[in-house]
Length: 288
Image: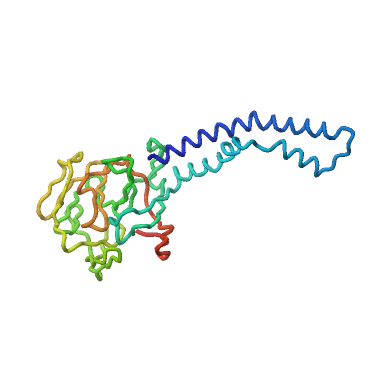
């Protein structure tokens, strides 16, 4: 379901009746109210309260108009805010644990990488590009009706390698720092945890000791010839204008290893904040 398209349709629908009321119905109600006051005041010394009540009765919108035109400013505000400023999302899976947990409600900056026209997602004002380490929401390449969230590990021209569960960018292994094991209270399991420095961002990453290093289930995605797979992992050259995405929960994430590269036109925005988690209020705040 394209929620932006639904909002846009509601903006057009309510906006039509809002303008119609402003240009046609409201002047008619005002004229009717004036005539009613003139008629009622003939030969009678009308009080201000009575006149005010009479005007109010005639200026009141009919119910069908109230529920169409009156909601236009609110719907327009939500549409503009969601299309150009920030958009809320809910984390549905554990692919970004420990950075993001299932149930986190996050905010996504819609103008971090440029201003895009809603519905068609065409960038009209470029303001920057995703960088290594950014947590990004994007349209799932295999089904654009779905939104995915992953971390950018490679940009156009990068050589991304993942060998024996260690990430290398352009031949250089990323700096990592071992940490205590991560306990997942939902699955009652422990995972290997370490800090990883990717670009300018330091974040936590998980590995599952029971999962082999090779990629399982890689699909026939566009530019797959830019990738090679073996028993130790993979190596991919990221095409220009595209991005390689991975989840922080490295062994429990369906990402670019499986379904390929993300194109710039599929980018929705940069995730930057957990604004609510009803199971854990301490989750509220910014993240990297």
